[in-house]
Amino acid sequence: MYLRTFVLFVALLFASSTIQANQLTVDFELPTFDTADYHKPYVAIWLENKEEKKTLLLWHLKKRKSDKWLVDIRRWWRKLGRYGETPDAFTGATRGPGKYSEQFNIGDQSKFTLFIEVVREDGGRSLLKQKVNFDDNKNSYHIAASKEVGDVVITKGN
Image 1 (tube, one colour):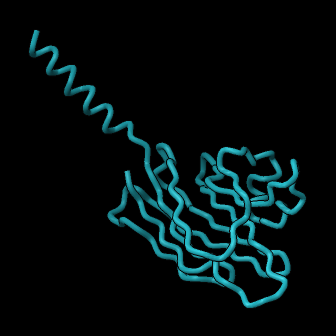
Image 2: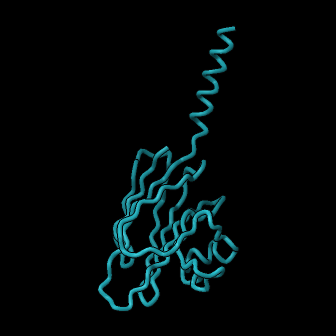
Image 3: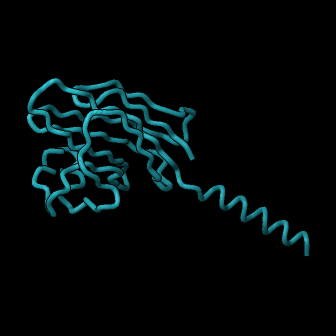
């Protein structure tokens, strides 16, 4: 009786540890621009692999039911947005300059490319991408700053 209970306990413990979803933290900065006509940027973060494309974060104008400027996040729009991929679960209003840290539960995804696209009206556009592999020995990845986004650090965790 005790042996059966012990075996069941160990099996459940092992199963729960293997079912844990992969976690990803993305730290990034939206830089300050010295311009009188500053507009907060639209930001999209998503992952792509052979099987799936999944939006993780979308910051855009939320004042209206439809946002005609979403098409300006060009790569995200072509891959996901035009197909109605804008649920409220991961959308938010645009944000101004500052440092941000966003955590994502990416399920059982282990190999994919992470995309970060930042677009500002009357400004520029930055598209960053990084291959991520949860099976390698790297704990984090670094992407150098570009015009519309500062340095990005992607950290893996379970």
